[in-house]
Length: 161
Image (cartoon, rainbow, N blue to C red):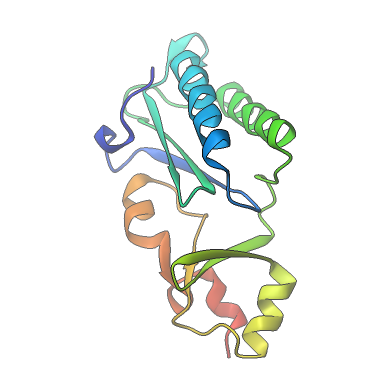
């Protein structure tokens, strides 16, 4: 059951998928249609899931489920991963690789491999104040507070001297 992302409780579980490039406006329109269809029909053992999504900065797909309504099952999580993999193939984009880092450069979002980010930190090209995206947040409350943070306040801090 598709609901507005902003109406989901703060305890709702989230999954964040970052793209290795920005989506075009036409891709976003198509992806939005596909997300609406997928989430409308998304179930756990035949029971509706109260879920929503948002797309941020034309490159992050954020899925959320109200776990108080019905919990996501292994099969329903597998279905969402399969859906994301279909998007990867359809748009020739990487959404599943967790070994990459997105961060802000001014108003733009940059994307680097973890090894490149580590080298940039060593070379002082990024700092403790660089805004990074912590895609490991677990729920909407954490997403709102700890997703877009200075590197010093994230797991990225281990690379900064």
